Image (cartoon, rainbow, N blue to C red; front, side, top):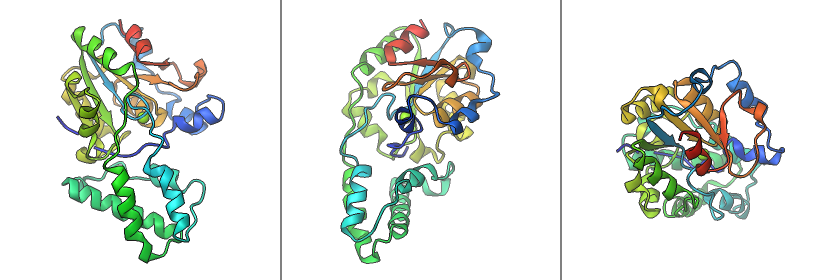
Length: 273
Ligand SMILES: [Mg+2]
């Protein structure tokens, strides 16, 4: 098993809900002009593997996340967090970070340095950095996400059909902890975690590992995710068959350039039946 990470509280599809369910122009432009393997093949019934994003695809958002705590901690220390500072901090993470993925300790140290740079940017006095980083890490590395209610049944169903099942997530080193907590670790064949891998979606290298782990041709792999940029555009570019999952809002049919969209995992199971 491979494994990795981030905290994608601010996923591309988060803002979508706030603007009426229409994918942002930036994400739409990423999809424009790419010919979907789904459309080329006319269906998904010859699927041999299904690979899922984790956050907001399998795992439900967490109300008490370090994201939600950070603005208050910054303010209490005398700093000020601009509206998009956190989103930018997440979005601007480099897609390749091999030099920081040599060990869990190295990865955490890098994330701590990134967090301190954010605190500096927010005007938090240096003397307060260590305390805030420690408090954030205490939440970030101990919290547990719960998967959506349809997850266990559908993963088991897919495997009963003889399909390979995997997870590919932009996540911290501790993804496996969340999988075991939700008792879905035994329902998957592999997982690929960005922190451990050294690349984040949508980098082609992490999708290459997905294809390698699945052990089947890329065009026989369905990739399911909520992020139009990381999951849909990334998997499409790698030759996989993307399926968008929109659990909290309806997506317009013209918003995906022909990519299938499902409201939940039962919809996915029906799509590839
Ligand atoms: Mg996601």
